[in-house]
Length: 206
Image (cartoon, rainbow, N blue to C red):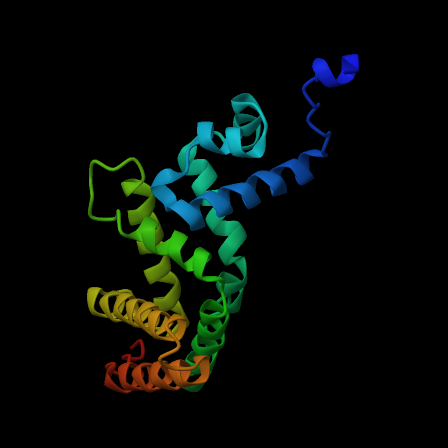
């Protein structure tokens, strides 16, 4: 047996540019969270699965919430971009939301699982990610409320959150192949129109 065979040396970690290393870490983090749940994601576990040191992970992400925020921004940027500009009228608002919903429904199931598991901690005050979950829920509600040009009141926010959860329910039906994406979007459009029609007309300033 040769010396190289009897005394194997540990392979060196390949050098990656900072942006490429960050991309690698986010991809591994998405794999862990999409496979085992967001609660399974940790700096130690990410470092181990990515084959890097904990310090290298901390060089890119300050802490676990920072890592989760970066992961969400990375996985859901396309949905956020689709709802980037307030709509000028109700028809535009519905069309904009349906466009964003299609992108949402076409996301990989693992990405939807990541988002769902985070939001489930919004009402768990002792959980390490509860503050982040509540912040995400508030920002999601703000985003959907603005799209409809609704007043920033509790009823409008409740409607926006209800519609978001309805979209999640439709995504479950799509994933189980009970309905198609087009059928889900038709159902969502009907809900959106009903909410818009029921909203009180805004009073113009005196």
